[in-house]
Amino acid sequence: MYVVFSYGMGANGTAILLRWLFEPGTRPPELLPDLSNLVVITAHTGDEFLDTAIDVELHVYPLLAEHRVRTVQLARAGHFERDGIVVLDDTREPILCLTSGAYALSEELVTTATVPQTGGIRKHSQRFKAWVMDQFIKTLTCGEPYVHVMGYDVSEPERVVGDLALGLPNKLPTYPLLDWGWDWDACARYIYQRIGVRWKRSHCVECPFAFSVTKGGQARTIPRLLAHPYQAMDTLTMEYLAVACNPKQGLLAGKQLYDLLAAWPGGPILLDLFHRHLDAIEWAVYDVRRGFGSKPGDAMKRGQPARSMGPLVTGTRADMLAHLERAAGLLGRRLESDGRHHRVWWRRRGIYFPTVEHLLTVAPALAHDKTNPAFPKLWRNGLNAARQLELAI
Image 1 (cartoon, helix red, strand yellow):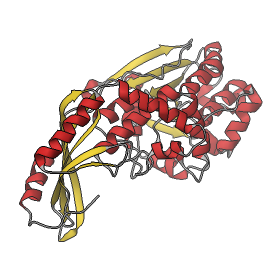
Image 2: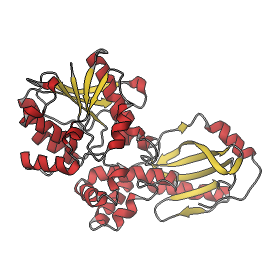
Image 3: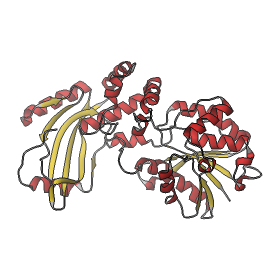
Image 4: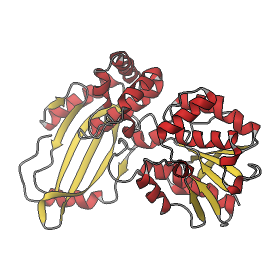
């Protein structure tokens, strides 16, 4: 029976692997007397911090290679499930941690001019990790039972409950850290005792949960951004584009990473590099329209929104600002600016629903034409609704 280990490259998973390698008596019965049926799988989002990849290459992969542990690296192949997955590496002698993947989460976010959402379930994790692994495991196990190892610790009971309901029907889940009574701190201590490394948390550069104030996330994550400025450029560009198209966006639950960096020691240096980056890339004027439905029976409560957007013209940053200024004059509207983003509002949403909003903005030319299937109906309903006062943003 295969023992499939979902290795996210964080302290929890690393501690389990190290303990199994150094202390054979802690392994489950399926991994005795050897590790021949262990398969360590990592699904890459394409946006992991580079220092995590370096730590894995220096300290984990040599041990897995020494013990001949089968190590598999996967990635999502494209936006649609029909695009499938890519097997980046499948070997018993792992060397390189291929965190760039094949199709990155950040690519999906910038082409749709949005940021990771902090409410509800973590859909991006399901799409870029769980689903990718399931596709490989189906082929690996051919429907036979397998032991699925997850690194959830004693502080994460809700994630354990959620995991029990997910995955393939032939999955036999196990959670070693629960059996050992370990939390993240215990894992970090064990790693340091064994290999002398203070393990960093594993997450995407753009992960909004990494900036949590209550858990010291900002103190950990901002220095990593400053240490990896070119990865930070991608994250800041993604946020800039999303906020330009929707002022209510922002990487940190509606608040902007840019503002956090502006007040952080060393942050203005990074932001100066970011502004030079913006000046050097291609820009576009975007047409952005949204339709908002209403909750049944209550015109004061917003229903599900839908959006249609796309670039109208592309060129230099200065040229696109000039285009937007001319458009403002032709439409008889004011060119509005918050200091970083520039917009011309053709229609603002009303205070009652259904309603619509329509704006022109300029931002890096990275987003694609996209119209939500529900948009045409919501747009018509909003246009046909009774005229009302507009809601200023």
